[in-house]
Length: 223
Ligand SMILES: C[S@@+](CC[C@H](N)C(=O)[O-])C[C@H]1O[C@@H](n2cnc3c(N)ncnc32)[C@H](O)[C@@H]1O
Image 1 (tube, helix red, strand yellow):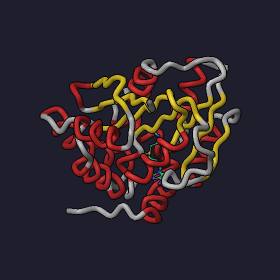
Image 2: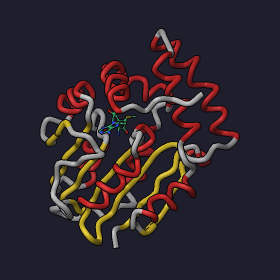
Image 3: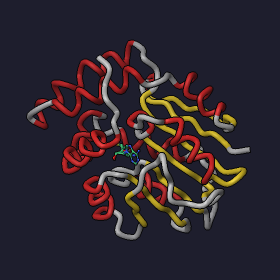
């Protein structure tokens, strides 16, 4: 099955699931997603006064976690789903959130010291355009953290088997989450992703895997 990542459809999908997004994330990750996000951020060099962009911010988890690590940063979250952003604004009123598309970032070249994108790129039809834009607005010497599902191994197959019944149990219907599993299947493995990032000019700083490789983070630098 080839899934549609038409931006309008993706935006609608997240607008629909926004209200239950955090709750469902806790269920399907068995409460671990925040810890994994936090640990992946620990590999970034977050200096005082840093200008940070969280792309595909959703309900803003990453912005909140970065503020926990260093309060003295200027952080902006962007997403194209109005309902996901409403959740983010509610949770983190002190953060700036902007409704925008990652394939057309409303920022000047070399604006940010750090850019993060967690569980986002997989949903973007033209992900090369999003990476081009990320590279453009990142300062030279800056870091880009990417985090998402990783290896397609024995453990990820267990995850894929457990998600639908868990979601059905707590959510009532599993329709939007069929998309999650399909998008996971099509998404490049971490090795392949690193090659794609390099083709946009990034250099690999480090890669860190979590939960037997089911989740993987890569920190890329702009030379
Ligand atoms: C799975 S959620 C991830 C949210 C958050 N980063 C997290 O880790 O929980 C993916 C988010 O990406 C957003 N998104 C997908 N494509 C986008 C695009 N082209 N521009 C902006 N946001 C996009 C969706 O609206 C959604 O909120």
